[in-house]
Amino acid sequence: MKFCIIGLLLALWGAPLAAASAPDFTLKALDGTNLRLAEQRGDIMLINFWASWCGPCIQEMPALDKLAQKYRMLGVQVWGVNVENDSAAAKAYLAKVQVGFPVLFDVDNSVSEAYQVAAMPTTVIVDKNGSVRSVHRGYQPGYEKKYENDIKGLLRE
Image 1 (cartoon, rainbow, N blue to C red):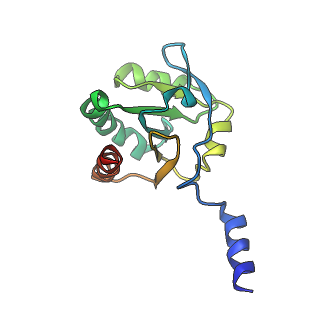
Image 2: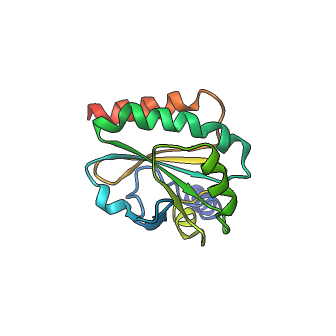
Image 3: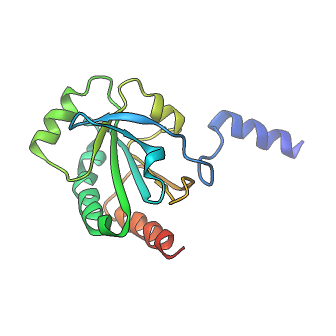
């Protein structure tokens, strides 16, 4: 009976993504290039799902940019994945607040569905072998320290 209840809860909420292989995807970036996650093996990936209408997402963007700059030379990449069907608002925001990391567009939400994104923003950290190691939902100032701790732990492995 206990296992049936646990199974039902997992079915309702979706199986946890952490410790699973990160779903591969290819998306078009703001600069027009196509980026594929599987081609980044060997790097630690921080994938941030965001939307221009999401206040915490917008607030988090400069912190993610600093994190990307700080750890880029150590084999850490930050990718922003915009989840809006119409990317015009996101592109307008990025014209005003430029970031140094790639921003990709998931206009059909297939990638956000594969990553079980249920809150904005959602940040997924993938290790060098392509496994999801942590998932952070939502954002409040200071969450970037959690991301940094996760990254430091993966760099030590």
